[in-house]
Image (tube, rainbow, N blue to C red; front, side, top):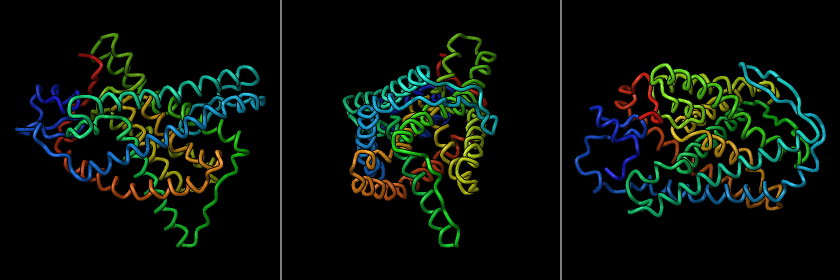
Length: 340
């Protein structure tokens, strides 16, 4: 069972027919002889493509970090979502510059963490072609969920425009302003939605159920799927969607697509941890990097390729949901994989 995710053994030991984390059939008599499907192989190639995008965006962030640092002077709001945006206080001057440095470090650390773990799996016996190996990496699921989200969004936008609706995009200022705003969104929005709305409740529940200090690790996610986690993911996604309504020229369709994005980010948080949610949010928001770095034509090609991958990714997600139906139905009410 070396090719299975870390949770497979636990679920099998509890007599479950399916793994509640990856959805695998635990009654598979010869898992080591399973073949990597064409669909999974295609998505594995797509994952490598998304990794290169993340690297390009990270370079963009690092190269422009000092320019953004020098630009920051006005005060900036620190907010929470309850569910609408509520400003707690403002930071400005040196404090804001320190905040930017922290944002940069956190984002680059998340990209590096996901890349290192992907490389570790690639270098393990059997590598990424071993069934279940690629699917147990954050980068694989970031690639699948990100491309599926973009496909869904583009289809909805096209449908609305064909129906005569005007789709507008709010003005986020200069490139330097957008670099800061989007980097902040990648980190802070994940803290106030995933960490506060999923991690904190799961930590308190785990403290009550397990009564072990390891429960504190729930704050950063990666505690595994359960019915409680699913409820919190849906709540977090809904709050995330509603919070973007006023900031996107009051376009109601944005609530739906952003809520879908929130659910995807919540899944990454629960299964892999906060770093995976920040990673996907950063890659999505920093797709404008190609324009910022003067290679907008390449950015258009990248967006088109991601859109094409999105249809395959959406098919894969639906397939996994159908295959994991029994696993989802047999999920425990609560689970904390940090506590053994």
